[in-house]
Image (tube, rainbow, N blue to C red):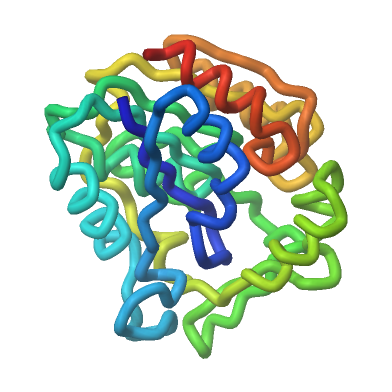
Length: 232
C-alpha cells in the first residue's frame, strides 16, 4: 500500500507538511508521496488571475495516482479534499479516500459552496491580483496552536499566495461515491470548525475524531499513521 497526500490551501511543499506522518508510515513499510499543487505556485506558472487553478491541481495529483498501480490510499487535507475527490475518480489503484478536516464535495460544488458570507479574518483576499493567502499574524494561533514551536516556524515559512479562482471552480466528478471513505474530524480546529467537519463527515462511511487542531499529521503524526495503517 502507498499513501498519496494532498495538502491544503495557501501553503507550498506538501512533503514537508506530511513528513512526520510519512516517517511513521515508513516504519510500518508504507510509502507515501505528496504532489505539488500548481495553484499554489508550485509549478512553472505563478499563482494569480491568469495562473493555474483547480483543474491544474487535479491534473497534477491525477498524474501521480495514475503513474503507479500499487494499491493506494488518498488523503486530502482541507482544500486538498476538493482536489483529491476529483483527482482519484476512475483511478483503479485507489482503494480508500481519507479526508482530514476537509471539504467533501459533491459534483458541482466548490470551496465557495461551503464558505461563509463574510471571509474569515485569518484569510486575506486580493481580487485584483487574483490571489488569496493566510494572514501570517494569525496563522499559528488559527492553524497550528497544538504544534511544536519549531514546526510552527517552519510551517509559517511555507505560506504562499494561491490562485483565488480555486475558491469558485467546481469539481466535475468525485471518487468518494464509489470508494470506502474515512473522515477525520479535528475537534480543536480553529480554522475549519468541528461542527462543519461533522456535517461533511456525514457523507463518509467511517468517522474518526482526533482532539487536535487543523494539522494532526504534524501535531499527532502517529495517530494519523495508525488510522492509515488500519486501512491496509
